[in-house]
Image 1 (cartoon, rainbow, N blue to C red):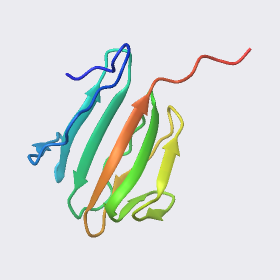
Image 2: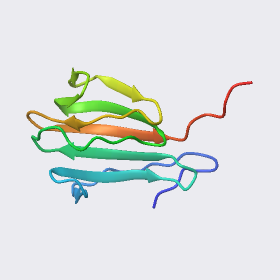
Image 3: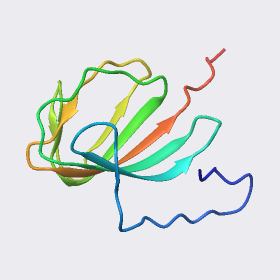
Image 4: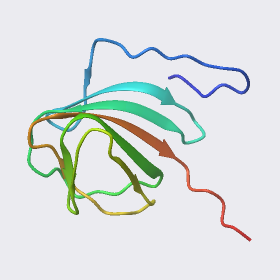
Length: 112
């Protein structure tokens, strides 16, 4: 587990190896996994149909690095950045395969 630094700078190098995910056709490289709820993951998606409908408790940010990526709403390509609110139901997939950067962050405290 690589946690966020309390001060200074942390450098995490992506590896050449990918770890198979629990979802078929998906492999990951965990960059940050912090107990405070922050996670950053590189995800490689093989060509696939829609995955399982799901939601996250965190804010989900997705940056498409390579290939194509789609959800129930739209298709995305390299350079597209998608942000989902906590609890937003979605299914995802890729027609030709993709590499994405996923960043999960806990919801901000309510504004007063």
